[in-house]
Amino acid sequence: MGIQRYSASIDTTISNAYQMNLRTRATGSNMGLADTLEVFSIYGQESSASSELSRILIQFPVDVISSDRSAGNIPVSGSASFFLKMYNAEHTHTLPKDFKLTIAALTQSWDEGYGLDMDEYKDLTYSGFGSNWIQASSATLPATASSDWITAGGDFYSDVSSSFTASFEDGTENICVDITTLVEQWLNSTDNVLGQKSNYGVIIKFPDTQEAEKRSYYTKKFFARHSEYVLKRPSIEARWDSSKRDSAGDFYLSSSLATGDENLNTIYLYNNIRGRLRNIPIVEDG
Image (tube, rainbow, N blue to C red):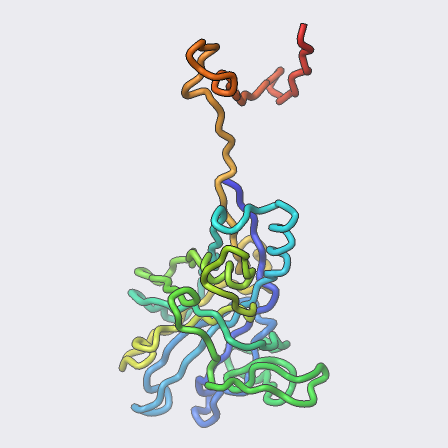
């Protein structure tokens, strides 16, 4: 199997949870440089009617995937699959069990930001550089204006070709979800019948039904792109069948009943000399 990984280019966590004082929400906070990503749903943190949420935003270098496809490094549309890969980050807090996460394509651009604080949410951006629960992106850097989400908490598609589900039984599982239909829309492949979408990345959140439940799912964490564990950073993994097939299964030397083309056979073999692969010299016809 052929495999090629593409690590996330930007990622962050956004939240509307309350700060420790239970008076101020973290809607203006940014966590773009944190080494983990966090998703949760808390019921009744501040009052019996309150609902506090945390969501993940990730974007990948689809332009690099497109270049690799043009160069022949990965197969054409229909011959490769693309998987979202994320790795569980252990922590000392409670861990939910038996839940699902929605993975959906975002509909607008956003800024990663420079925030780190995932506990007290002190790294505020508001109209500055860096996305948060309310703000998607700033107009310039340094920021002079900002672009808000149409719906606080992130704007995303809900069609079946752009949204996916990851299931968790114990809560410690990693994410490995086939998002081929979405990646092909980002790439806008010529034979892609699903159309085109701009690459703004994906949002990872609890499904609406679970966010509305009168129970908490706290907390699920994944390693971010800034993690020291390089192999556990979020990535899109391209997979394809790279095996080479020959005529070994139906090989015959020659048959007068077959045509000239049908008498041609292809055989692949490994030539090992003292434990090392060596090319076989070309033998001239004689």
